[in-house]
Length: 316
Image (cartoon, rainbow, N blue to C red; front, top):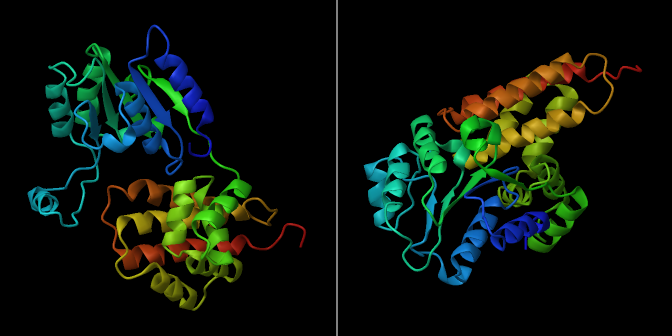
């Protein structure tokens, strides 16, 4: 059982053993706290199969990011790495709904996992709503959501919510010590600070070796960057061609660095607040925009340099 899942399991198993199981569940919490793992394990309990034997179980259907086009689909068919779409499309929901016209294959229950549901296209979300309004007997939906507010209110209203809490810094440190013993202190500290209590995010930050990136960000926040040298260093550490996950992690790291500065008194916090707001905006746009990596790195550095103007303490 993953950290912080005890309450969710109690609620799920109590409902599973009750007379009337709710047909739709919204698993809400930060990215990386294990909601997807919980959804799969819960689906296995629902249909009565061991998780080790359930990868292709006919009564567990998972909707997630598919290949972005036919070319990428051919790569997947050939067992090659492929690029995924940025959303879950209506064709995927329609395909799932076609399956719902038949009874479950091996038992009397079927699980539909949508991960992440907050990345459903608008038309796909509207199509899903119809299934939630009139669910087939024996069909149960598990919607994984990192940002539940992005879901249609009508979808949220039809789901029972399971909330997945974040993990304390002390627990995160123990986890990283066990699972990534080779990580240096700077990398572990950066991972814990940026992950915001998400074990999955922390492990990802460690794997990406973002400790030096965080140190470069802190240097800009502390001293500014009048000659652009620190911004160049930051861009080099981020990399010339970072993938989407690395860009997302870097934005989360920058938000964390700026948020920590807001904890202390300063002469004028407005530049820091404005920087944090801009980083939140960029993070929200990142899943759907094709950012130029070099320009994005410089933009992050420039925002951090602006926040450095608030470095003077209010007490002098």
